[in-house]
Length: 216
Image (cartoon, rainbow, N blue to C red; front, side, top):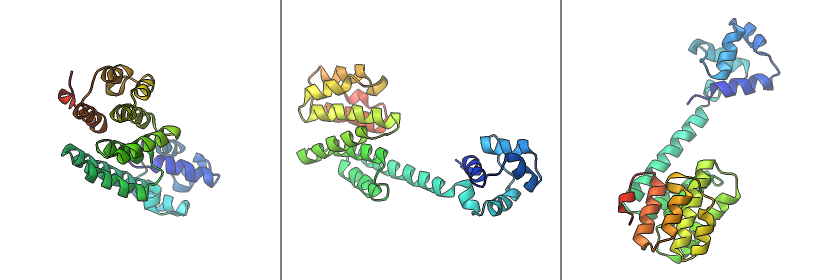
């Protein structure tokens, strides 16, 4: 993704310039500037140096290269962690996210992922840490997807530590699909072996159709 549209809009407003003034400086039409800021089209590559100079910034900053590189780094982290989870090495997966949180300490997505990695551990302290991380995410302002995934995971972690009442209470606030009220309540209402709980946690963590491993 190129972030030039939002950057142009922000930089122009920061300099208190109109689209018409930008168009006049660059010898283009105001409609072109408007399309750039809406993301409908991009400025010609030959105009990037002039735009960067006009806004006293670099071309990399103008197109949002820092955000692009950050997004790519985040994707690589998630892919590495998920690869470990697929092989059952939840501790290696946790180590990947623990390292990521040193760079992104307040990232709700990484907190949620770490909670999921911890949730596969048999150590009571790790399960307690998973609960704390989930509750921290849910007390903040994560994206809707992260919130729903964390809620679903927390339901199953509560089950794993033997707190069925909390699991059911949390499940009643879930959305639909694999993290839904119906799906999670169905799991809460039956006796689930630890392996079945882990299989469902894996389904939530990876978003893959592994539910054939879950006892019906």
